[in-house]
Length: 543
Ligand code: SF4
Image (cartoon, rainbow, N blue to C red; front, side, top):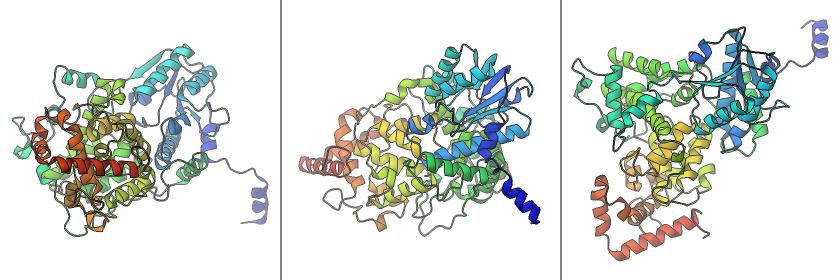
């Protein structure tokens, strides 16, 4: 470097950070429409964005601490949202959109959506607020309240990211005694013309290939690793901010790998279709030590941020199937998750209403054990699943349902406590996803709206689907005594405690007959052992 350039450089003020750069390009009012873009609404094709007038309108984006502290949020999750928002805002600015961006460290930041919206309204004097329908009841109320207090009309736009509107789902659900996902999924297939033949029947003759998707591994698998998206300068800046602002937040940022731009999300999608989808189906339910991803997609995070659209995700999977690169059971299993389960869960969330969060049909009130946050437990399956969530912000659906969720269900943890944990720890967690999946599916707290029976399982299931038990200090074959697998103890205790409550459920009748056959002395030993474990894990009382 020439000497004069060096000295000039030394005398110049430090370059603004990317976050400061975003904040410095503030918008001057008044504006016509102020379009509020939330952290899980980064959809470049949303009508809210497409209808912006670059001269008269502006976008408002806000980083508020309330979102990371109202319910605890892990370092991974907070970084995912803030870094993806910053990338999206810069993308908008590069397209000529005026963005009023409030960073977390802004000295005037009021750290709540409601107060920040009112501050922006005072500054920019918009004629109208617009926002895509949010993903959470609480945020909807905050938006409406802020608009009312600011005395500005608020227009909420349908979220076109989804394949099913809230009204369409409610129309489907109206009058049904039970909302069965499988029936919803079949209608989605017909409606969208996906994997259906000329007569409207399923391609291949079956709607569902789940029975082919339960192959366990016999030896160590060698699935191809998903791509790592190295954090760029913007993401590294957010990581440092999160470490500084939320040092006590759970989880680590050591293995941060998430795609946070649309381009990176498309790379993630292509990699999954080419390298893991062809074997996704067969081993969908398998678990293996030190193989956190196996053949699973990691697309739920960019999908829930709206960086990807479900239509393009399913379209690419179907084209790979039609080209003969992916077998039917694999593509069907994947399509079911995107057009079936994901849309069903969102429909349930909005159809039932905010009261859903308080449901507790099994009357469970236990505390969440501390090891859920730290992974410091001697149960090998839990240690592996929890440390992967802590370090990756990810666990696949069987780990979520049959290990971490199952343990909370059978041990008696309160559904709200475990639901808040899922919302905090997973990089893809948003309220409409977490509540029905946790309260409904994992905890049966909705009394059977989402799942037709409680997904309670003993250690035998985990042993069949993983290699966890061979490295565990507990005996997976025992259900009583100090070495008995805690999953076995809690499983039988759960059935004993709930057998009258579950007796009317046809799908539980075979299992409950096994409980009825237990001798009274064994039932009492199981109940005693379960209470001892609950105290040891601090689910109830002190040991
Ligand atoms: Fe988990 Fe029980 Fe197996 Fe240990 S023995 S890994 S606690 S299922």
